[in-house]
Length: 292
Length: 315
Image (cartoon, rainbow over all chains, first blue to last red; front, top):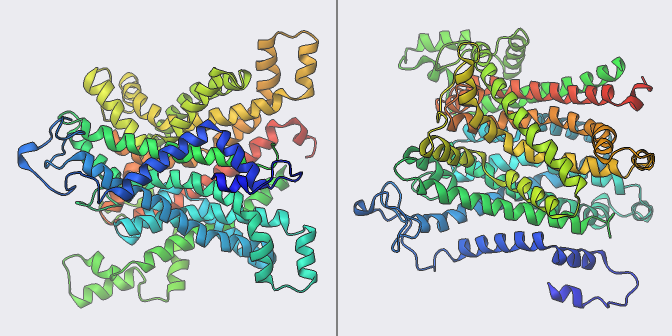
């Protein structure tokens, strides 16, 4: 982080927008809090295999539905598995689902948005109408329908969520392209005879980057909730593999006998989603060129 | 005005047609022979042939689409495999329940979101603003199905104040109906309240900078009157149009909320349909929500026109 800042002379008259954004981001307490939360969850998800925790799949009939204790910090579930361990392994599923589905949405959506905005005409008409049609179906209902048709699995849930989130990126990119394509430097690139692809990659794509990054961060938050929702409905991660959503699905059957089974997964989803939302909001404020 | 609505309608039609193509193609991509599914235990080739003829499965796909489309335009969304009832009837039965839930959620969302947004804008940069913003962001981040579980644990299991689940029509027992709807309405309303709060705040902040606010203050109007009569009235415009657009979120949120509180509505219908592989119902629901969403978009546009006096003169 600091390396980026130190490359810029403080006395320099034209401060590079990236460094100004970094400064603003670092000055925002809520963005830093968001970053810390996200980093914490990524940390435990990555470290899951080496952490000294119980096997998330190991069942034990002697400790079925035990309340949190010194041995099982977060308690045990309906077949005696350690909830802390399942929470940590479940972080992998949640974060991966959030990130992979947004990657799908970005990798599919941004090129279509670029093409749609850059070329205009009938190509734009076709892509825009398809985007409208996809946006006309509420996100979660589209994801549920897609997951239902694809069949229940974590991979399919990620595809379903990615495709449902994709139209937002098409629309966002298209709008951004429209606003820069008449700029002089784009006209100039065209005048010197650069190929369309080169113009898009070199002069248009960089302008799309900031808003897409902000939207992607916020969409990871939405995607994590969507994955949890699909898993909660039984359309995501399949048992016995741990996932916060499917843990809640089981927990709702033991609400009176073992309420702690429901506490932790939901709290974790809430925290990680809050983290991504704080980070996304912070990024938006930092990258907004209108405010200085 | 009319030509504007007409233009919007003209755009809405190809969008709906595209949705129908998606929905139809999805079904065609399903593995397995639908005739075999429909026949159930029956494996008699004659029966299979009869079914293929009856459902036009031997026709080219494009014919099948047009046939399906024609039926749909006449209000025939197909037959549920599970209950053998027309899909249109199923949806018509469940929709009022979800609409009741949605209205409840909207009322709660407005009651919380708008005052919070105004307070936050008026006290911009103070502790009130930060707290309101943090609560709003939390409301956006909390998975509503978990909030539902936690509320049931607290309010129904621990305190025993409200029933944990069930549904009662407001026409048979209004009190019980309200009791069963408060918690789900709140759960569904939280995310909306948060969205409304954030939009109210930014709309108010925008309006508060306007010249007419300074004028109102200069001529000695009481601050509360400035906020409510002068500022809020003008900030209301984007809020009202936003509310129409939030309809889609309500429907999607209702899927999980209804699941938690076992409310026999639209959302439960789609989940049950997904699990029994009742694809005709899933298709019907996706088509209906898309049509509803497009309609709400249209209403939002029209409202924007009607509520904004400056737009009215351009009719």
